[in-house]
Image 1 (cartoon, rainbow, N blue to C red):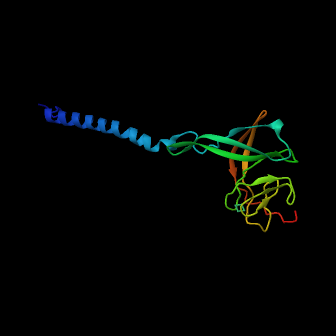
Image 2 (image 1 turned 90 degrees about the horizontal axis):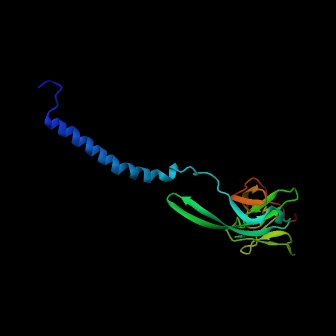
Length: 177
Ligand code: FES
């Protein structure tokens, strides 16, 4: 027998090690893939836009309340739909503005009021905060930040809303405004 010949025992050892390694990899790789799957998704971090029923030609200077559902939100392995609301209007400058109705004090839902005693203000029923039409908080009231504003996109006549973002750099307006 030459130095290069493989004994029967060595052959069995190599074969069993190879087969064992292959089987271990076959069982382990799908588990690893499953564990990190959400991290590999291409849409991770991409802003999701949802079309609302209101069309560009339906917009008015008066805020209109719309409800919409963001579908298939992914949170790790969990997928769900989320109902949202917005007040949408066209500003004097012709910009489409979509505001979150969630009060920045403690999260109650504000409503739009064109009537006295505080006309053309968003008003919160919980602790009396008020906001201008552009969602800026009135100074001296419980809410100390403006209403969050949605990302807005248009595709022809369609309006699509993304995430609502806080605006931290806008000072409160005085009560006399
Ligand atoms: Fe709106 Fe408190 S939750 S004023």
